Image (cartoon, rainbow, N blue to C red; front, side, top):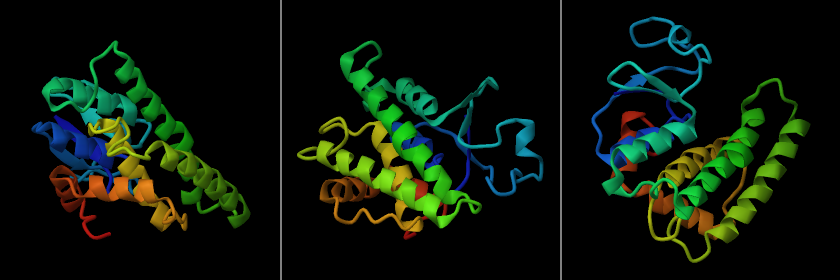
Length: 203
């Protein structure tokens, strides 16, 4: 398998998940700035959408979208318990978390990366994110991870997205449950290895 990624993008989530699952894969740098692959070819030629992540299977089939890629990885190695079994209520809870992270957090960070967005507009999105994270902090009370005591691919996604806060002037330091979760995930060996490969360790 190949994982097309860009450092510190949302592709960090499946990068972590692949290492948590113990799966063999080739990380391929697909810069979201240049859209060029290491061999100089155009990333758009294999992914017309131009963004990451994209997971290429051994038979050439390609999967996009973070939530889908994460669940696919989890289902490849069910013994790692990165996602509950399909068709169960816990699985729908996981999908609920993945959808929340994608639509309420991930998408609201987007305008903060846009250089053309005026600061007044960015302030609106920071406020929106602060409220969503405030609610999330309450949901993490008394829990090790989003699903309780069991680490899942949803935690990979939340960790990857929440890293952006410090670069986007979004102060989440008062959210103690969220901060504890972030630190707990950061200390996992698979996470440390993914950060090292993407040259993000200490950043």
